[in-house]
Length: 527
Image 1 (cartoon, helix red, strand yellow):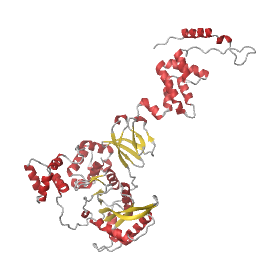
Image 2 (cartoon, rainbow, N blue to C red):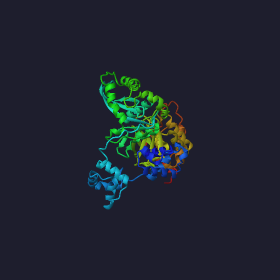
Image 3 (cartoon, helix red, strand yellow):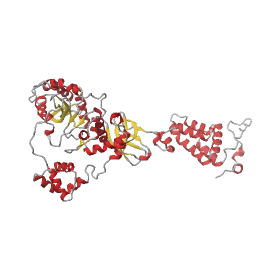
């Protein structure tokens, strides 16, 4: 999904398919398939980047998503792997790639030239050991090379000990002006923080970054078509630059920044005593502006800071309007409770996706869930332990229970009758109303069992007597006494105590007779 968006973003900017493929790190044929699928989906080159909605990108992914056994290579690569030793022997004999391709055709193995060239370079050491030529500096303000360098120990007040510090070095190819970002780690967050600081230092964004094969940037290294991490591509789209990574173990692909590593270690770090990383960072920026920026460069015979200010500063891309919020990209599974877990918080998903795996993108504000490139759900980001549940994602008969929706239960009770609704409201008139939900669920169960009419009558009689007990309602319905009128209060005998009762009431025979009489008078109830 990120790869497709990167290809389409470069194509909308006016670049040709070859440049689009190089900028996105994909094969030119792959870039063409992405563009053709997007145009078929309605993408117009003059319409701008606003057309790249999640829905359009999802349609393109569904059309062009490749199906490969190992996720990277196809059947042509597999055929070459079976003859790797033979191809290696031809490479050692000095045969060119086209000649090797012709020899393979004679053996009945037909593979594309580009695939064979990549195979020879990656697996058979083709093209190595050649002489080096000096590469032109290119357009001012266009390219910046980036590399990590290990410096030494600096005190970390958070952990209370000295730790190894690394320098992320940015070097402008044309002017040689440089910036250093110090960090204790080499994570994606550290690299992005260094880039954000570099844009503030330079006053803008370079059009192309040439990094080393950093694991936060490169997911799978390849001499021709490296695979970028999803997080790095997302940040590149945010900042607006393209990435042209150096090949593995090929320092000559980024010579400008490679030359700066020893200079930073020897001129800036060696022999200095820093209080902590923050102190070292302040002094590093000052060193970049004065010492490194105003030195007379041996190759250009000019001061890097002055050349940058005169010829490069005005050509940089505008820095992003808002700081980048580093997101989390994670494959999550939709569980039987209709939720996924992202960052130790729960987010609801429609029931149709239960058991499936989705891609989650979570930043500081939103959590987006994608299925094969198509946006499924968006939630506000919750802190660890929190939960965001959309009632529409849950089955209707379970939504009230899951959401502790007291109002929904009251409405259901009122649909059964006025007295049933009032009886439910009386139950919820409590400082902890959700603790009374079980009683109301039982009351609604009696409605389903006996019908609304008898329960309405029983609740009316209970309200007259001010008896708030669903168990009493159940007993009345079981005995069929919900329609028996309430007997008038017995007048007290003169001189009798307040709670005096007729002695005949304690006669077991009379009590049994009254019980049988009441059962005979009870109205007949259908099953």
